[in-house]
Image 1 (cartoon, one colour):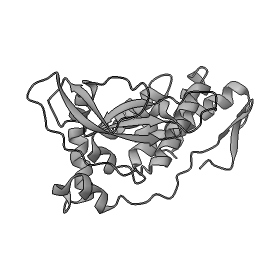
Image 2: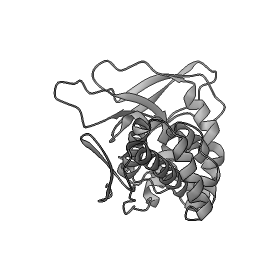
Image 3: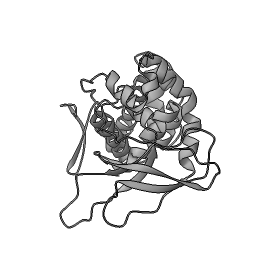
Image 4: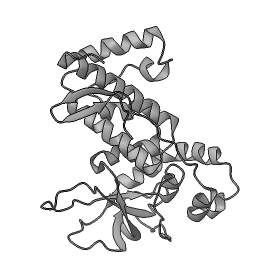
Length: 258
C-alpha cells in the first residue's frame, strides 16, 4: 500500500514519498440494512450527512462508557456502565489489536465502544458485526450488554484518532492530533496545488521540531484507513496535508531532498 518512491530513510525505516490511495470498494446497501433496517431505502449520502450532525453527541456518550479490562479470554458480550444518555447507546465493543507482535510479547487488546452505523457507513472492509439489541437504560450509571468484536488493524495506537474523526468529521481536530502544532487553515481549505499553499506549507514545515514519531502516527492512521476501506475525502485531505508537512519537515531536518 505504500508508494514505490522512497522519500526519507531513518536507519532501517523508509517512509514513502506519498500516501497512496487504494482502490476502494463501495459500501454495500446490505451492510447498512443489516445494522439499520429502517435506513434500507435512504440515500447513502443523506445517511452520512445525518451522522455528521449526530456524531459529536454519539461520541460524547462513548466518552462516558466504563468497561472492565479483559484479563484473559475475550468474551462474546461485555457489560459496560453508561454515564451519558444524551444520544444513542453504543452497539458494540471493538477489541482492537495488531497482528505484528513478536512471539515473546503478549498481544495487547484495547477496548473501544462504538456505534455500528458509524462503522458500517464508512468502512467497506468491516468484519461482520453480530446483532446488537441494546435497550437504553432508564438512568445514568446503569449497565448495558454489548457484543464484543475482535478487530485486527495495522496500528491500534492511532485508532482513537481515526474513530473520533468518523464521528466528528473535523479536519482541524484530526490534524491537531497528528501534528506537533496547529496547521494553518489554508493548508486544508484552499487549493493544495496553488503557489500560496505550497509556500505556506514550506514555511510551516520549517517551524516544526523533530517529527519522526508524528510521521509514524500519520503512517499508521493511513494504514488503518486502507485496511478498513475508508473512502472519505475529508479524511484523505487531512492525511495528505499532515504527510506533506511532516515529510517536508523531515527532509529539512535531515538535509535530504524530496
